[in-house]
Image (cartoon, rainbow, N blue to C red; front, side, top):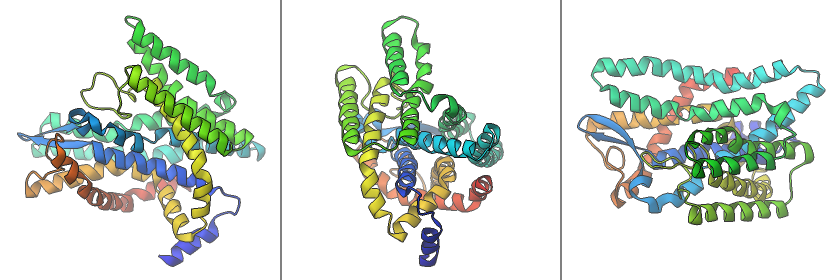
Length: 366
């Protein structure tokens, strides 16, 4: 292992900003751990339903503020995509060829997951599972892919949006929320924010790719301003406290993205700027950089298969009966205390999935 870490360190170009890779790895792992903490597969009378502890214990909402890291992914994505497009254009690479390469890295691993579940879902039905249960599991696996579709669309639009000031999509997100909460019949406008909301961090990253990364003063301003705005919108604006979707809740900050989620994303972007210096210092160590590099090499596989890993653990564990923190309703302190003990088991199952299916991501990257 030490030799592998040393080779990874030596093979990394000297001008590569390792902190950006670390931010992307942290964003992916934040989503994964967040899902594992707030998603419960409850077994009741032979039926599986998806529940969340945030529904019955709303006081846990601050947990979602720690692990809802999508804005950081879009921020780094906008920065990296813009830099990549500028370099490709300088080398004479066509837009179509550049986009095809990025799309392959996104969607080739998806094909493997869809193929597996195209077999698994009918097999479960044939085995006697209820349609309602199978549909709940399939939705759990496929629902995070909305993020990939939005990210792919923004990536394709990089030449157009890379010069767009993030204040414009921020203003659109604000106007959309004002309309959908004050005008009868305007609820459908909220879906405009699926693009506008994530354009804010994406455009910010694109601007940083062109003009250089901002200093710590800008980072503190974004962190303080975005954080204050998010707190104000939750406290006085009627927005939910949870920054993730909660099954059964009347309003979500992510489905579609709300102005509170956008403000929170600004705060996260500021925190990302402030982390750049410390991360660069830590990542001079081969062991630290190796962990980040390996996570990035399998980032899509980790993201795509983490729900399947959790489902596999829950399914196999049924052989031992209904287990606390795994099959029981997330409605009390007992579930909260039991759940973290399952995270290493989920991680082990995810490692198995990565070992089996990372080949598709590696081929796409190649």
